[in-house]
Image 1 (cartoon, rainbow, N blue to C red):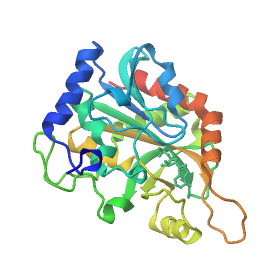
Image 2: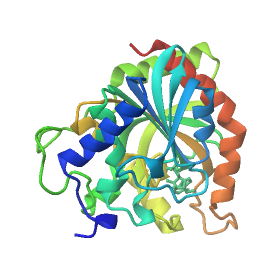
Image 3: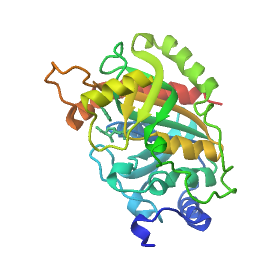
Image 4: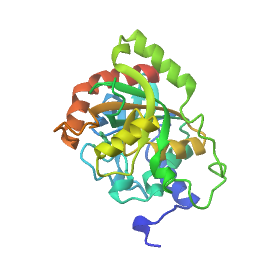
Length: 287
Ligand SMILES: O=P(O)(O)O[C@H]1O[C@H](CO)[C@@H](O)[C@H]1O
């Protein structure tokens, strides 16, 4: 199979990537933060940074989407060793799910125990406003329901079991910790809990699709995160996820509003500082 777009990696390839990182830095993070579209500035908050371009790390895919830098940044946040993915990979970029999720198993192999995953998402829940933050309590894996689950294919027991449970995908303790922090920081008026739904993209949703997702119980919609969460849970990482509501999805035929990536990036810019402060506090309290 051509290596550019094949559908699986060998254990040795994940290991090669992990060993390359371990050889190029003496930092040993316990926590990884995936920065969503336009949210990469979070990585700049790290102290004593060491960065690697994705193109230099064996087997790493490349970021192709505006707002995704394509760098792995190691450093300390709130005194804890972290690694930030400044840019993620999406299925719509033409990558198979194994590439989209490749870094997660590498992080597991270098000793990471907790994943904090962030994304930009369209608000479906009518009580959400642009700029709100949704803590993810559950997900609707539409891409997975249509056959694109990152765990399809031969299972490697060295990573996890054949049939992993997903009813506990989002760690309840981390979620309640985040809610406490939201109160402490006076963020409660713009922080909610909800269900994140992933579609394959890259098209934004039609009005009928948004209405369908609303009926199905989705509170926010995006084109990422769930594959990463599934692979992280499969290999035993604890997961906390949040969505920045960057736009309201269109559910009304009478409106002229249109979803667009510029608005998404613009909202991220406006909320970046609050989001950084929130995650920094959360990291300080994660045990
Ligand atoms: O999920 P992240 O990477 O934050 O980005 C979201 O923003 C982009 C669309 O504007 C899509 O990539 C969608 O998934």
